[in-house]
Length: 146
Image: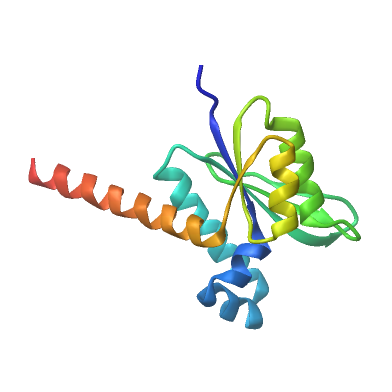
């Protein structure tokens, strides 16, 4: 039986590697995070992935934000890194799901691979998102022709 695919995104790693989001983050950090979440929600809707995004936070405890049919969003607590939450999620779910982590942090990539997850770069995530968008456009074009 094939495992369900789960994509865990290291939010700030991706934001700082994508020029448009990095520029947005310099002036409005929350807006950049919201833009990434929106992009990931569209990707989840157009693919087989269940998407989880993790950001470094500042609160007293880890926070999970979840809306029905949306991506799961986690913020680490103050003094904790997003990496530690990603590692816990991978350790917990890699046996049950096909987990892939999107990050450009080399040490994080190595760590999650030791827990049984795959890793992809921010570039590969961008390419996969563009491919999913093109596939959706093609499907819509085909439906309009009918």
